[in-house]
Image (spheres, rainbow, N blue to C red):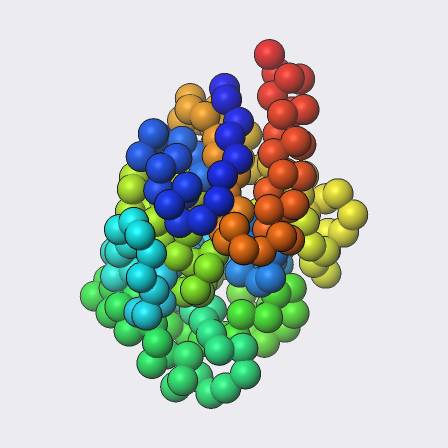
Length: 221
C-alpha cells in the first residue's frame, strides 16, 4: 500500500482516477465540521461543490446529492446540509447550492436542517445522530466532489482540529484509521489531500495525517 499526499481538487481527482482512497483535509472548516458530525453519530458524510465552483476538473454536485439522498432513503433517515456563508439566513445558504439540493430532492430524501460551516461547533445547532450529512463548501466540498466524480472507491475526510469528543492526536488518528481501513478493504493506495494549496493549515494537517498513515502501514507490513 502506497500513501500519497497532494492538494486541491485537481490532486483529488487525479488520485481518485488512479483508484485510490481519498482523504480530504479542510481544517477551516469543512473536514472539522464533518469530524464533529461523525463524533455525534452521523450515518455518513459527503462533500459537494457549490453552484459557483469552477475547478479545473469535473464535479457533479447533483450526483453527490443524489448519492447521499439515496443512502438516507435506504436508511429511513433525513439529510443535514452544511453550506456557506457562515453568517446569514438558510435561504442565502440554499441559494448557492441548488445543484446538490436538486440531487437530494430527486432521491426523495428530506432535508431536515441547513447549517453554517462553523467547524466543531456546528453540531450544536441540530440533531445529527443517524442522519446523512452533506457539506457543500467552496474548498473541501469541491475537493470531495472531484474525487467522488472521478470514481474513488472511498472518499473520506480528516482534520487535526479538536472536537468536543477528541483532542490532541486523536482527530488525526481517527482519520488515518478510517483511511487505512478503507485502503485495506478496497486493496488500494491512499491519497491525503490538502483541500487548498493556498491554506497552510490544510497542507500541514495533510502532512501530519500522511505521517500517521505511514507509521500505521509499517505496522501491518
